[in-house]
Image (cartoon, rainbow, N blue to C red; front, side):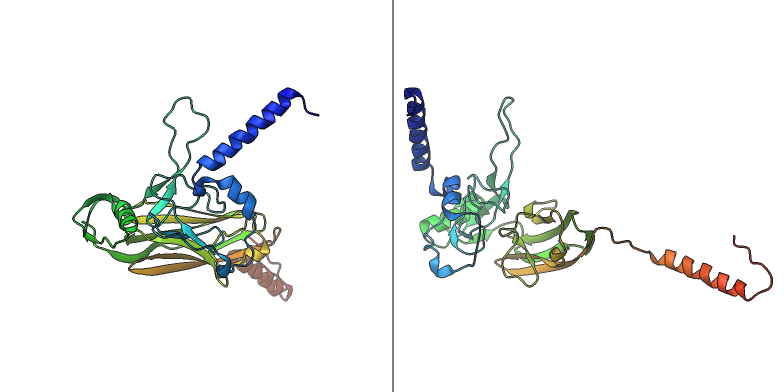
Length: 294
């Protein structure tokens, strides 16, 4: 039997957990959803996906496994900075998850990352209203259930353009590599990575692959990185940076070669030098005069 004080502590803990689960919005009940859904993606069967709710302020996004659709987090809401996990949820269209520096002098830990609009600057809507940014215009359109179009903006709309493509890479097993990609477009595009031959976006449920993205460094540019930790032979292949917005899409690829640790490279200059020495020695063996090498 538990001591009366222990029973009271357990009871209060249960009450606290119940209140937290009841009070938190559904998309913020991260630990409960992870416990219910588990960590493995498995095979995608969209017929088993729950119906996507209508009127999502920030539009629909796919889950961590790229299978089912649900409401994306709106501007200012907490979000998952690491896309390989799903706790608070993912940001909706035109938004990215951004960490904010702590403003408090004595604050435990870093503040939670929040969804930030990728397009900053006031815009005019077809409803005659001015919105702080394109994300707010989209939110209003979704909540009203009508189409509010962008009627004026100083930047002309454009399809995505790869301004910096990923480069081919070669490394050893056990090492880490990073692919980088920059895309320019307006409205800002959504970006992601795929491995050629696979349909799902990375990282999926692979714990040794991570993907990050942020705005910049130039206006209307999104930068994204694909990092692979502890390379394995099966990681070799072609990786594709994919971007799209309402006006089109663009992609660029890079090849990754993975060598088993311990492989020795012989550079072409060294090969040429060695061949020259051998040739001179063979020539000297047919001559009566000794040959001196400098």
